[in-house]
Every structure is written in C-alpha cells, then in structure tokens.
Length: 106
Image (tube, rainbow, N blue to C red):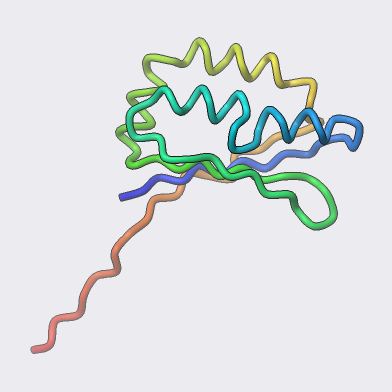
C-alpha cells in the first residue's frame, strides 16, 4: 500500500525560484527523504493561479513513520531553514492507495 503525503504552499513570486530548487524532485527535501527506506519520490506541482503542491510517495505508512521517528530533529531543522520561502503551508493530508473490495459472484 503506497502512502502519499500532500502539502500545499503559498509562495511569494520573489521566492519562486528558490522554492522550486528546495522543494523539487532533486531539492533538499527529496535528498533528505531519499535517505529513508521506503521513500519513492517527491513531485512538485505548480498550481494554476499561483502556489505549489508537493506529493511525497512512500512504500508504506510504516516506512514513513519509522523514518520520522529517527529523523524528526533534522526534519524540523530543514523546515526552519525553508520557512522564509513560503507565506503559508498546509498539509492537505496523508493518503493511502487501496484495492477495492472484489465482489463475489455467488
């Protein structure tokens, strides 16, 4: 089951280039997460009308939770370093893939 964590960011125009460097597929966040077992990738999407969304893909919630348990301090440090790039950020949610229940033919 794949876990996808979705964040939404408001980014002032003057910070857009630096934001994209830090939050893109090869940015500081992706490099940090790449140290974790179970991390797949980060996607950065630019919203029509402004702002951004990131999608962080993990093999499972357990992989994400284990990484965060041991790397929380560094996570918070990177978050503080990148804080000035955004005017607002919101975690939209943590979504897990699922397989629909199969209907039995009886």
